[in-house]
Length: 140
Length: 391
Image (cartoon, rainbow over all chains, first blue to last red; front, side, top):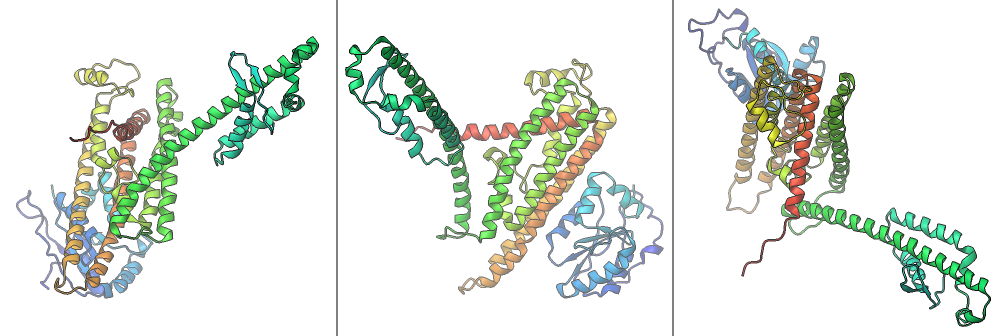
């Protein structure tokens, strides 16, 4: 895996103000354990955690793309799924989502944002763009 | 009342009806094993007549020699007989009325059953296509889930119709905003109720929901992932609300209103403010984007299922693994139905946030009326005269 720049230390937007942020790679098939996954999450402004070949993650991705965000997508294999979800569940307990993390799960700004439900609802109410901007995923 | 005698008596209409016809009405009621509510009406009528005529019944069925000896009887006997005849004729008319009532009820029931049959046949054809040769396609739980949904949905449509009428009356009557708000809330809640129902039956058989067999044919024509397309809805709304058209759907009014955007003709209109128009346009765009995302997800699912089913060697006869894997992937369809309904729900809620109570009421009325007309279109289509047969 390439040396990714940690999210926290990202510099200010690049010179060309109208361009979107540098595309993050779509990491594939890494059998990451919980900790690895957390690292990835904190390294990206927007990342989608999904099962392999999940069509719902495709939906999330397409929606974010139309807004001008190219989210990273991390695919989880079935055998690791339970473990990773557990870890995420315990770590994310502080946030408002106390229930089990559902896949696909969207992380914005290093924090768990929610599932497709949440993304849709926020998009319809018109707040998604500002959320993405706040997280630095969108400029303009 | 039990043994008819062939006596002929003049009725008020000067039609000679044999008395035994009264027996016929009675026998018809007893013989017809109709499990309708109409039987209770007939039993009631029966009982009423029984009670009234207890005293006269025996006399009516007196031996025939009464009639032959009529000329030699005193006047009061003649009077009594005339009274009996009147009584008999009256009862006959009442029975006839009850019989006709029963016929009408049966006719309505028959029409309903025919429609039900048609719908079930369509569903049966659709199910039969899945599992050839077996008329019991699915397990009992699936069938009962579908049957339960069909019943609930029938009720849902009735309540919907009632709500639309209430809204129309309320808007006409200029009721207070507080009362209107209650109607709007219950109208919205009614749609959310439908989404819940659909979610439940989707777990039993998602293809059933997506195919739209539970809807009328015209509604099915516009169907998108098992329901209406939210953005299409908004387009209709926008036109209606911008022009501040009244809640009565008249084409003249809408054409007139289009040309007279700033001139509000009817005092109770409250067209959208510019801010509102902006928000509705944004909503429409967001809706469109979300729909596209879901549609593309569906396409991806189709590709996935298709390639899974087609995978593996064709030369061999065994396809079970591929089909089994495809089955798993199809589970995702349930999520799609849920997400589509979720989108519809969010869109409705956002609309209610943007609009005033009155505007929301008009919008709900327009929406409900639109679907009502689609259903009417379906019925009209179903009863259109048959095509002339080809030579």
